[in-house]
Length: 248
Image 1 (cartoon, helix red, strand yellow):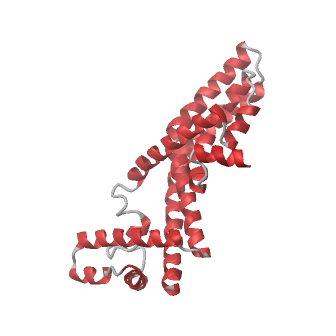
Image 2 (cartoon, one colour):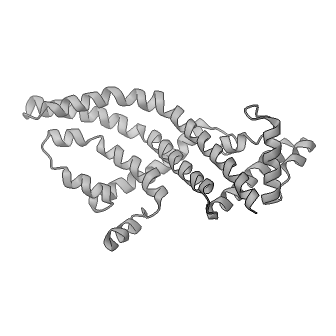
Image 3 (cartoon, one colour):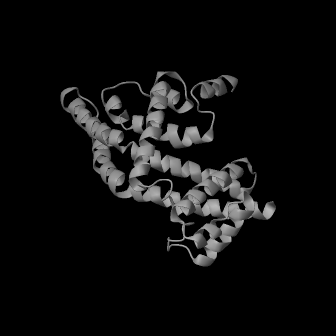
């Protein structure tokens, strides 16, 4: 167990966010090429074991992709929310111009924010200083997020879980530029292995199914999934903010 923890620390995977939001999408990306490797008779069992435990050359590859996933995830984030972080759900729902939440709800949130941070968003709204309002909202969200990170409660734990879920969805979606082409290449390689090298047709069929299913999932399903996870995070954030305000 000690050796495993040492390896996880070495690869910066001791944190749950790193493992689930960055490393796991990287692992899934690498595994897209598993059918073609098996079709050519390459022993992959040990490769998969090492990949999943965070050790060996395969893990180094996956860790590298995990950092790429983070960078690509940030780029995707800016595509989905061009004015990030100001148009992210957590910030946007606090905006006086956003119609998705009631004025009464926003007043309650403003009161909690003032109590927790000293930032009076309601006063700035009355002054009609739109730029100062959005800056104040972002500052308040950052302060409360930091408080929740240190806070121990079921609500705060849910915020952390939702943050991991969002990171996973975002990074997996961002890596589609790698795993979708990889699925096509794997498919082609599997059929070559079957036709010219007496490979198992099972892997050719599996790779074909992946090549057909993954593109619509990547471009038609996952972007909405990322937005949904962002909304879930915002809901958990405001619930935990209310609990935090009541406890202080």
